[in-house]
Amino acid sequence: MKAGDVRAMGDEQLKLAERNTTEELWKLRFQHHTGQLQNTAGLRETRKKLARIKTVLNERQRGMEGN
Image (cartoon, rainbow, N blue to C red; front, side, top):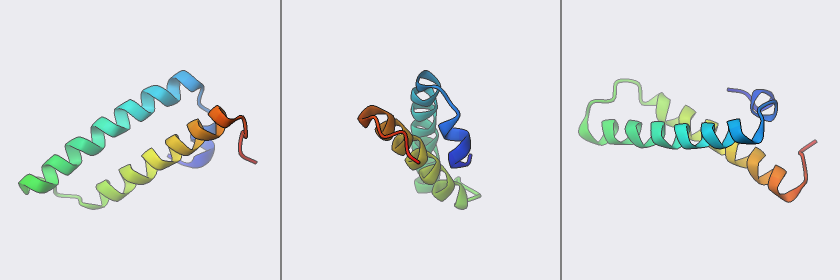
């Protein structure tokens, strides 16, 4: 998910995406620690996705609407 895609989402969609991505990251971490995770690159991608979502939410909360 690219930054442009995240910015195009509505506030409710972003909050839902944040919740889902946080849950997905938790599951990936759990799989990694139990040795069941095959694709470790998914951890990094999911962390970046969550960071993008949180950045846009924070910008909107502060009224900046990133340029």
